[in-house]
Length: 229
Ligand SMILES: [Mg+2]
Image (cartoon, rainbow, N blue to C red; front, side, top):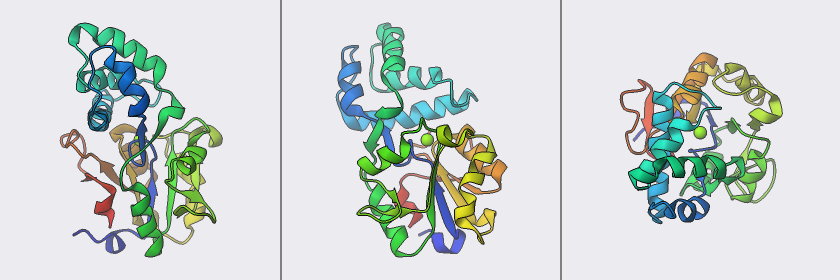
């Protein structure tokens, strides 16, 4: 078993694809119209396959075309309907739908709180991520019922987005005294998260539960956040 305390002194997390995914409760009925499955587990699987397709295409935050195409394939849209489903997905999946909690997320953060590991969030978002992480029961900054993080950095709020390593400068003051290479950054995008964290001098970890990105990275990959414990 990997011992996080031996390897890292602190952990920063991406939010999308790490704590929450685009909500299958909205997307499944939307895409079922084009023949997709209603099995929510397949939407979890599709997210990671789609992220790998996006990473493979080497595009950054603003281009979701490769993601959308792979996503509709993986949820079982009939090939004749791919173009229509991609269009509707591109119009339906917006920032506020990244809200369906990934099982175990808050429990892992609680466990990290209990062992005193400093943690925070750095997300490419639209000004909504702190509110959604709280409403979805993942974490909060400061006192309250949820696991606590030292900061939640939202790219829209700070004006810098991954893979620009400068976005991490908004989090690092909350981790003063910890050497950057001893801070892990856990994300699901090879280009934005692994690339950005590497450029910032942090230690990147890819969430890759279906081994979609085996050939894309040489950093550590994990299937679930529990592996950080
Ligand atoms: Mg992400």
